[in-house]
Picture (cartoon, rainbow, N blue to C red):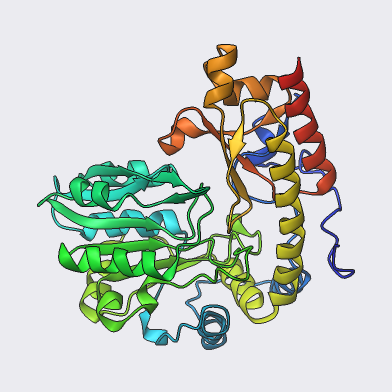
Length: 386
């Protein structure tokens, strides 16, 4: 059920304004379930804070202020049981800039950056942006969950590896890593003396209450010293284009190196993004809880529908509003070369798994009203029935 105060069933016309998500298919009858932004209005608490700030009328240069910092610190304690020092915060316009910076300070040009695929596409391009070398290890599907191949991880790490680039919770497979998995990753990084950059932007979107998200850096002090954690309110409260994120870097020397790499390259954070962030972390949890309940219902619709579609398979996402769908059996049975193109022709825009390092898969964004999702799933089913 939708919380009475928050109408997630409301259909908002996103075609009437510039939108990357909906603009891709302008003039075509294609429902966009691809890029990771949701079709819901931002929380009322966020909108009210933005209106108050806009009414002030002056938008001068602004650094993070005490009440914003307090809201983030308190939010991390409340939601993740992680107590951080305010001095650990480094403000950024986005997490993509954040992990590119991590690549830039990890070793020297030609050194390796290790990540697990499939993964959010900018992970695959960030190493080359700073002259580093991408090193990949494939995640494996066991017992209905995407998991680490620990032997393959060890084999992929070389003497030149300097950075482990982690996505947690994982995009696109939706995993919330268990405590023992996080500990094994921390032990792996310590054994190989790796810097770790953990993109935890989806940490507020854990769907299963019995699988709480634990930041990697919260494991222990030694792990924290080698870890750069990236977070933002953008995915959880659907405010991505307000461009406000932050790195949490407990080690002072590492934090100085990171700030030095930012100089003259990374712009200041959008003041309206910071206003929205404070409101989200301080007053946005009732909306978030209602959102999670709605997304759980959407998840069940996706799982039920995909299970009935011949040649498709998926796993239950433990976090995010993203479903990772295996189309390889369909491709083999029907001679289809590109499943994303196949479904786009049927009126549903999905993300092509090839961009995530996994051709033959598609990613479906179920962060949308039920009417949109149900119609998209029906179109997919009709295309497979023809």
